Image 1 (cartoon, rainbow over the protein chains, first blue to last red):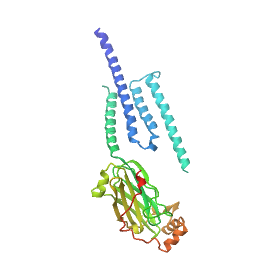
Image 2: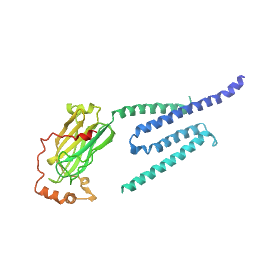
Image 3: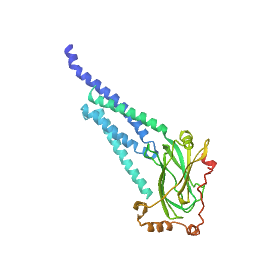
Image 4: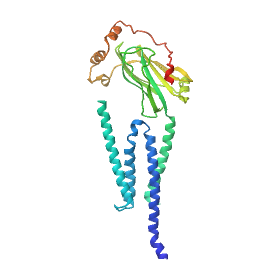
Length: 106
Length: 215
């Protein structure tokens, strides 16, 4: 019995740490959003909030995936891929809308 | 706790502290309106409010050199979520005497009149009046405190720097003045020649804000 608990202890610790990281990440993702809203209160700047938000959460999600060495077919990697896709979409939209505004001005 | 969770916790503390500071700063910001009129034809190069706490500018709609009258503001600019200004920057070319003005005037918060407006929770409305010979008057208005003169200065004329003489391309002072006059209506040029705009506004301290501006 003792041997089993000794063998499971590091795995259990690791699972606990993973779960703690997950809660901390959720708190971070929420706080980052509120901080960006406070940093860019003006209507013109709000356009960039999603791009900045997804850039930050992609980095945080990558740290989670890399630190715990998640396999490719796991939900944290799927979430990371989703964040990357959303980041690309919002960056592209920001560039498009900025170019459109510049063209309209001239 | 592993190193990753320690980093996440440190980040959370940092973000929370930043959010609290930003909420505090956000509560210091106000909305104000700023308008400008001139008694003489001027070409406004820059006019804006600044505050040392931020890099944001409080903007004005510039005075039109072809349509001007003392006490008549064409349009007020709405400046939203911005700090109460502590200085006014103004740069313009005066057609009547062909001189350049470029000054930054500070608004003294210890002055009792301006101090009352700084502390009020009402929306502030600034009206800037520009007259001949570099005379500047700045009024502040609120529905309860009314309209009061908070700044009256006579700016010194300055020699323009090369960047002040840029209009489509770098110009000499004489070329710049010629270019500026080409933008002016002939009737106004005639009035300048006849010296019809020479009127002293140095002692003029009254301004009545139209009632509808408060609504």
